[in-house]
Image 1 (cartoon, helix red, strand yellow):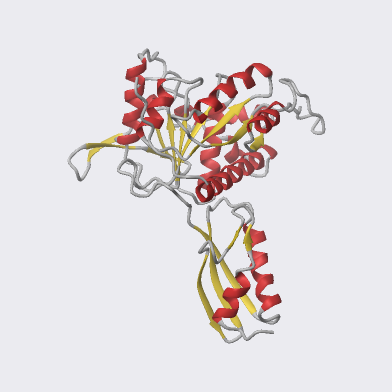
Image 2: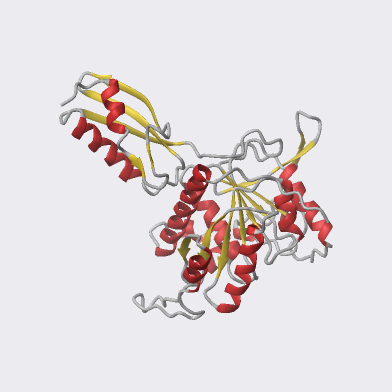
Length: 368
């Protein structure tokens, strides 16, 4: 058995692989502060996201490596922390934001905003710093879903002398929506350039500060809003929300293909299948596939992207959104809360993989 030394511990940990990234912890620089005091060895493992679903597996693998390869009787103390990865270093716009995630759908009514709200809250609950832009200018819903309909953002003068908007903070998430600036009962009738200008203002003039993830809840379809986003900031990736029914899948495919166009070239992180089935409260073991079955998986397989999660059609989720407290917060032990937490972990995992293997996304330049 090797002597309990710094070199021996490093060697042992070089055999512990980060399952998603396919490399060992030492190569990935995920181990810090190794300290040996007698028969006690301590170190810190820096995960790529606080939402890492493999945290315990990596912890146990590190402990096993030291006991197997160095000292079976050593006291191994492991601190698990995280530092979200990013490819957005040195960006003039949103320099403190590590990852920008577009949440899109081909058509309306598939629950995209519900998914975005619960994803943001679930990520924030893991300890991540999260912001959410309600980019559906004509149909803003986040003020209602977060219970802040009467909130009004504060405008202040930044160090550069320019006015900045302070986002609303609710449930640990920084929020910005046109709904904070216009009465909820009034219709917002804007031409495309006006809506695009509003989105650009939400990105460039809001004081977002330091964020691990900035989610953008985009309007349905493929429009000026989508082009404005990719022309303003480099987007880490997009997720596509759909229901299993063929008409929704057809439109979702168009949204996916938009991000994959060569001149846009935004990685698609995965598919979310919402309303995958319905289970009545009185029949918890029954599943009724109201909108069809397996459509999200077929779409994911066809385009070789992950299926991030399947979300059932649950009355409590709708009620939670209407009540201004997303379902992931209502009952932390409920199946729907667990489903949204798992979805957040899947998204965080795909962001980490994307940042490790895919090239940096650039701002899009499209000439008319």
